[in-house]
Each structure stands twice: as C-alpha cells, then as structure tokens.
Image (spheres, rainbow, N blue to C red):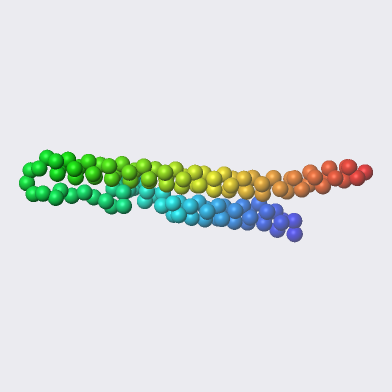
Length: 124
C-alpha cells in the first residue's frame, strides 16, 4: 500500500504535471503563433504591397513604391515584435507556473510530515 502511494506520488503525478505543463506551453505557442511571427517577421503589414502605377522609367513612381513597401515592412516588424514579446512573456509565465507547481508538489509531502510533527509537539 505504501509502495503504491510512493509510486503515485513520485512517478504518476509528476508525469501528469509535466503533461499538463507541456499542454499549456503548446497552447500559448500556438495561440500567439510564435513560429509564424518569427518566420514572417519582415513581411509587409497585412500583405500591403505597393506596385508601380506607370510603365517605363519614372523615378518618383519607383521611389513611391519602394518606400511604401519599406514602410509596410517596418510597420509589420513593429507589430509582430509586440506580439512576439507578449507571446514569449506568456510562455515564460507558463514555464514559471509549471516549475512552481512541480516544486510545490515535491515539497508537499515533507511539509505535511513536518507540520504534523510540529503540531503534535505544540499539543504536548
């Protein structure tokens, strides 16, 4: 009976905590699309691409399209960087919460015995 308890306490529940922790990390990574945001970091904002309007050589038209595309990419990078920072911060919080949950579970059994004996000592 005691062997089953220790197997449950030290093997089964830490595996479940790890699985739940992994699910949270997976969810937040997909929710914020961290991989997609990093892959498409310098893509134009909302796919807004400026094209030349005139045929032939027109310096003003070429510069207008070029700078419009550069500004669109800069705005896209700025917006994606905010989302990346928010997503990575959320991942770090989930990671810290998982470590805290695991540490709390490991410390729980010794704490129960300690406080039980401390309470008994206070009673007598």
